[in-house]
Length: 56
Image (cartoon, rainbow, N blue to C red; front, side):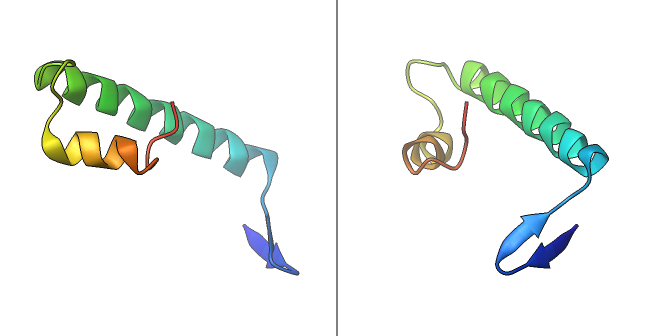
């Protein structure tokens, strides 16, 4: 991964690895929401979701 004029450049393999990691994190968030009851997620999870830390 390199940076050029403020733009991050990465190989296709790096991009695919990031996409896999993003999907794993999305699944972990979904699991945690279910664990803490999806209607009333844990306050820290709810705050993170409201702030847009997790793109679903």
